[in-house]
Image 1 (cartoon, rainbow, N blue to C red):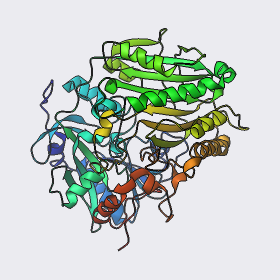
Image 2 (image 1 turned 60 degrees about the horizontal axis):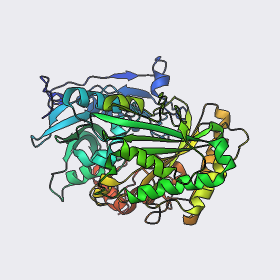
Image 3 (image 1 turned 45 degrees about the vertical axis):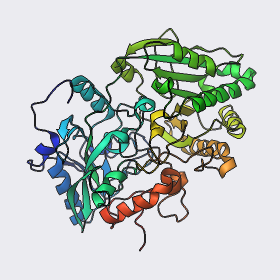
Image 4 (image 1 turned 90 degrees about the horizontal axis):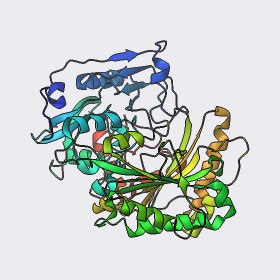
Length: 521
């Protein structure tokens, strides 16, 4: 299967023989406050207790115990949810962070797979797959994000233009589901009969988002998941805001060039630039620089240099070497580009950042930026806001497309399959007194950027909705009949997700502010 074999029993087989093994953390325990708080310091709750789930048997027993006591369950993997969907006053948080195995295994049909437990982090996945098997997944760059939530939302990262989304390699999910008031393990496979409930449950975990259908114990990936490139080039350049403020036209030129390049080089069969992933950080002017960070997986850096040259073509403002950016990336090199082994580059590009308060919004873009969008970015990124330090505020524009766009919208639950860019609006702060100022600022920037389409990145226009793994409650909540999030996250796939929800969790045991809702009869 890979570069190494294992002597231990596969995770899924061993689970069937285990007795429940876990522990409960109650109020007063020194771990309680930490384990009831998210990575984002805005989110903290007061659950009745936190169950550190130890294995499959414990997950089933812990869920049934909560249901028997009438306590609402929520599930925590890495704790990185952008909204407070795991918050659970008076309920039970099922914390999977001790279930972090990654190893060669088999699926329910006996096929060879790589198995990732729901509590594993991205770094657990990369470290083990690389060192043990010379393999990897095209998943996210933030090391401490939990696989449990990252994967079922779709998952993408710096290798996705060449290898597609994380879920494009998924073959099975093992989930503790609740039917008839009792939890039990369901193994749902992509090769289950097409009209079976299990097939729908598998499909729902290819982009339906976390906290909707059950407790994900394990993800099984195909035996032919990618081998990582031996080496990659990392590039980091910056344009000083002081110079851009003197030449506002350069800001527009930069954005037009970036969008035009990705429009030309993001098709499913792109012949040259599938190995390029790039992030343009439009920081607030108080940060000092607009930054472009890129990873290129070819040995010849020429195409990378051509890309950077194309992005700054026609600008009077010259780029400089940049060793730090607001989005958490740090490239401590004295030159604009450097070649590194892929594994070291993956460590370098970790973007988890510090524990702090944060707010996020997102958008898929199918076309280069409109004049309205460019003007909105400029207008908001140069303004000051009383009561808010905006040094860590930015619009991050990720390259997208290529092999991501090789799938059809209904093949997985991720329907956005013809975009060229994926945007993440971010703002960070530490003082709770600044909450309102930061939230209002980001909401205003977002509304202004998409005012041509009603203040949101409307689907099937120049934009194509928002990313479920970057949830934003400003897009509505499950108790609002006119909420925009079902349309913007899921597009035409929402009805099938609701059908899976009705069958596998018709009583709505698993719910949060932006759940997939149970359809009415």
